[in-house]
Image (cartoon, rainbow, N blue to C red; front, side):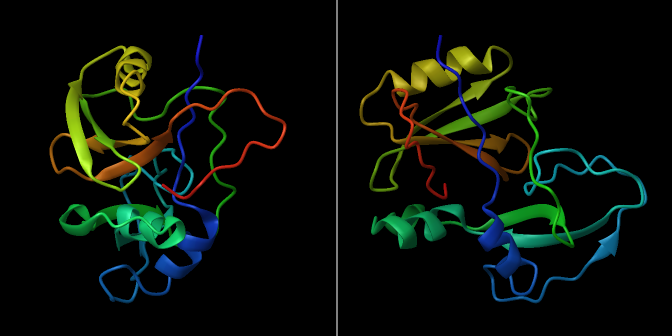
Length: 169
């Protein structure tokens, strides 16, 4: 059985976004009075009283800069909630976060081009397995149905290796 790993926004990227986001705007921290915001830094929901920032994030642009890919028109940016200050990051315990609602799994090639998408209501593991059955799929973005917002990336699973690494998707 394949285990899929959710990749949050990388820590070095978060440091940059907390100063200036990918739309060139300064981050504006605020106190979340209600809680429940999906945080892309730690892949948890916010608690009432948490200090957050809503920033613009361009996951493909940053991934392309790191890999030399050219996503062209598929480069997009959108809003994401993050803790306003550094947080410990995710502690997922082997599960995929934010699967409590309908999501879209958007498939991408190694060049950053969209290869398709699928609405997922349940069986996220099965939907990811189906996505990666296509050898052209290099990674998948999990996105909100309502607004299309990026939640996290999932890379093609690699055979077990003691030197496993992760790219910024």
